[in-house]
Structure formats: C-alpha cells, structure tokens
Image (cartoon, rainbow, N blue to C red):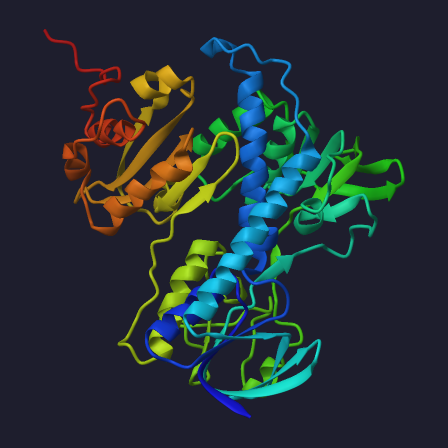
Length: 468
C-alpha cells in the first residue's frame, strides 16, 4: 500500500491548489477525484456560468447600444454555439489543471474515496479498488445543488448543473430561489430574451446585501431585463408535465416552460465513511473546522463548501486550501484568511466585502457611510454604464474602513481594491488620498471616501446651516 504525506480528496478550487501547495512544500502528495478535475466550479459552476453570462451580456449590450451610436437592435444569437464555446473553455481549463498537478508531482487517483480509518482510504475506480495511506488528509469534496423533496422530479425541472447542459433556452423560466445562483441565471436568461420569473420565499432577493444595493439590483432586473420578482410568499402546488411547469404564489398561478431550482447547496459527504475516520458532522452534514482548517481528528483537515461556517465561494475554498496544506506540511501556524470578498455576476454586477451597513446596525456599531453614484462619474457616463454606486462603511470613531459594496458595471472587479484597503487597515481619509487614474470607474472609491466626511467633489454638497 502506497503512503503519502498528504492526500487531498476532491479537486475543486480548494482541493487542487491545496495539493499543489503541499507539493511545493516538498510533500509527497496524492489527489483523489471521482469526476472531472476542477470540481463543480470549473466544470458545472463558476467558469461555465460566467462564460454564458459573458455571451449573454455582449448580446444584450449590442441590442441596447443605440445610445452609443451603434445600430444593432436586431442582433441575434446562437445558444448552441454559446454552449459549445462554454464546453471548449471548460475542457481547456480542465486540461490545464491536470497539467499543473502532474507538473508539481501530484499523483492523481480517479475514483471515489472512502475512509477505512483515520489514515487509510479506499479509492474505488473504473479499474477496481486501491487502498492508500496518508500522514495527513485534506477533505475538499464541496457541495451539490439542493432539490427539496416537495419538488416534483421531471425533465422540465432542473438544477444548475442540468441547466448548463441544455443546448437551447426555454421561452419562459421560473427560477425558484432568489440567491446568488438563481439571480445570476435569471439575468443571463433574461438578457437573451427568456421571460423569467423569480420566486423567493424570503422577503427579498440577495438578503446578504444592504437594502440599497438590493433595490438597485432589483430595479434593473424588473426594468431593463423585464424579470418578474416575487418575494415573501412560497411557490406552492408545483406540477410539471410535457407542456411546462406551474405553481401558485399567494393564490396566483405562475407558469413557464421550465423551472430552475436554486434554493441552496448541500455538503458532499455521502459515502466518505467519515465515521471510520472519527469525524462527526453537524445537523446539516457539514464538517466542523478551526481557524487552521483542522478537524477534531489530528492530521485531518477540511476546506470549502463541505465545512461548517465557511463562505461558500470558490476563492474562499482556495484560500482555505492553501492554509490547510501549509499546516499539514508543518509550514508554521497558518490561519485562514477571514476577509472574503464576494462577487455576484448579475446585471448589474455586485461586489461586497467586509461588514455591511445592516450587519453593523444589528451589532449596534456606530458607522459612517460614504456613497458615490456612478451617474456623475466621467468614465461611467462616457461608456454608457452609469447606473449604480459604490459605498464605504467606516467606523465612526476611528474612521477605519470596515466594509464596502459596489453595484454597477464591473463591480466584481472594483471590489478587489476595497478588499485591499480594508485588509490593510486603511481609514477613509487615507483611501481618499490615493490618486486614481482619470477617467476610470475606480475614481468612485475616491469620491465615496470623501463622502464619508461630506467632502465629495463631484456630488451635491450636504446642506449647511443657513448663515444669519
């Protein structure tokens, strides 16, 4: 039986970087993957969805480019060709991951892993079973789409992975769930002319964001994209047949050609045999870890969506993977990075990092806000992308930046600068002194930082007391 210093189970955005980092540190490393290298993110999540979103956004912008002097209102698209491009990109990146792993000397086992003991796992593959031993293990098995039992099983009711396999779009679509996945798919489909209805049980969509950000996103969804957003009531009496899917929201019938279920994800631990490793899971099936990504069993680490309390984002899993690998290899006491930005690829895009305004209020913290609308920013107006805003949340006493949100064009890129500012402990005064190129969207952060103290140059001044 072959023995390794580190065995990683799962090759998603947390698993394969963990394997490579451990190999860089001189460890003998093995990685076990039951499906495709790259995991959900590369094959059925982040990369394929953003590829389709990029195509849909280009088409939508062309059709609405009259303001820029471009006459392309009748632009057409070939969804099958978009899907073919998506598959080609996924395949190329999948091959890239394999090359990186092999180039770093990581041994790849194809099959399903199951614990036999805290140090031994069995890998069941197409060519039979193989047992391997590990001094340290990293569990990176991720999550899968949740499909509640009350939802009928029918080919017209799909989750995100199945939706990505379609080679044609439905004429109409119900999206069950107003979270990140549901809203991203809803915007992509609507940009290509699909009649979309979002049904969300909670009071609003994207509830992790501040109300003003949600309003901006919802306004655009309901306006330019024509998405019907129904919140605060359940979708009940769901039925599906060869003609489509119907249900009731507050007594009103909602129908569409297809329904996408996007109500969350569940950790992938089935079949792992965690009990044989001495690992217990929470009521939701997650694995508990500490700040070092270590489980309660010595030498066993866990990262990403499979863990309790972690942010379910690919880049969060990557960060945790590096932390787990460094600790497994004895490279100091590496602590998982707590500040994780989030990017949402809706239309408009949304970026968020750190403390939100609503969370600050819930914690009873005194904060000052600085908001700047893109409508008065030169680059935004020139490019015709002038809706939305950026916002700083600063501590009222120390002026230290605690959080930031952006909604509008390229918000998913803009949030990186805010993350760096918060991570390095900047104050809003310091952020306002940084010289940013003109004309760029990044200038909005300067103006918003000045706005914390009522000193934004390109915004209407705050009311001052009248002079006697």
